[in-house]
Image: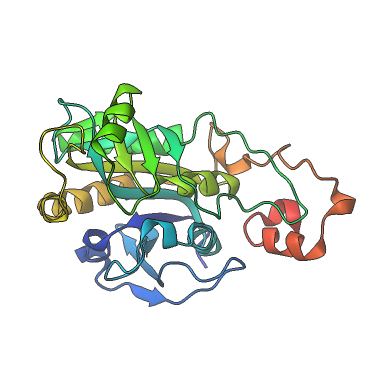
Length: 287
């Protein structure tokens, strides 16, 4: 198995990429259950990739139904060292219209869902998350966005809501007032779990609407129309990042050693079952 794959998390516009036409769907299981779907294993240029449709093929899973732990564990088991996640979001800024790609670097969490951590059940860890995305992988994305030349923003805060409903107008105005740039439903706990799995993680948010703070109501038809109009751009971005991000296992930010000093439970108190489960995502610490 490759030990240096680029993990991709997103929707149908990515797994239908011409570059992945000869890819193979591989059914996988993890210590945290089944991921959203099988993994599509293939190559983009000379970089091996593993693609996972976040909501399953056909978009079968609501944000709160996604098994985020299994998704990240499956990509780690497939040999991924870094993950590029692409998602559709609402926007809070007049100067970031629909169609803009935002490189997210901060999050605010308003979700209530389970599965926010790989830890618990007798082994406790507190992982640093002040810089929740990888600056090295993010730099490769920023270069690709700049080379593309179309509307984009480098840096932004994603407000993550539970969903599946869109925000009320009052909520949207509150979030805009907080200084958030985009709002989505899946960025967390995804980014948290990637950090615990010691994976470099970057998120590109495609603005599809202006959320409920604007005078125009958000509707699914408009969101899908913007997504479809930007499929080729998203595909090209992924290919450009695959070419730039080599994922050689080193990371100046330390994503690949994020658990160093984070486990607080004494080793002689680790429950064997929990240890074995954690060994599937960070074998260097738990085997």
